[in-house]
Length: 151
Image (spheres, rainbow, N blue to C red):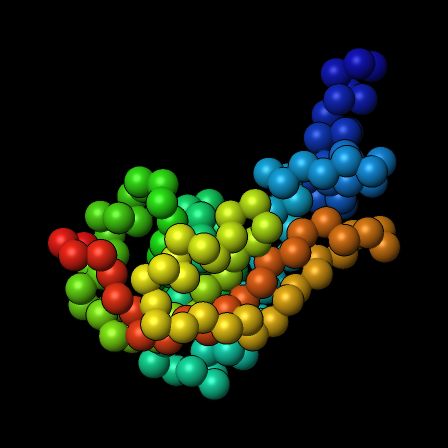
């Protein structure tokens, strides 16, 4: 019974709502797995307005989630953390380009913003579950990519 109860809690946590959030806590790891279809739709709307912009996020896990949600393997992470995106992304080939960037309060736009001439918010998302906000990504338009020398 204990195992079945724990399994049920895990299923609810991953599919219905982050259990901690329902009781006043906040679990970013689980919360950040919600709302990617809606976030992806907002990113696609921004892409229609800015078709030459590349798409990025401020953290490697969110880049993978967004890429999966919109079916685009070219979504990249622009973060201070060294990750696989540093090898996959040819920053020099994107010099001068604009970007649509998804960031959230745990991994803000600050680092990525330093690589652009200007950054402005496009959309503040609120992902809801059971009348509670569980995740709040913000979509930005960043203009004039200027990566650090050497990458």
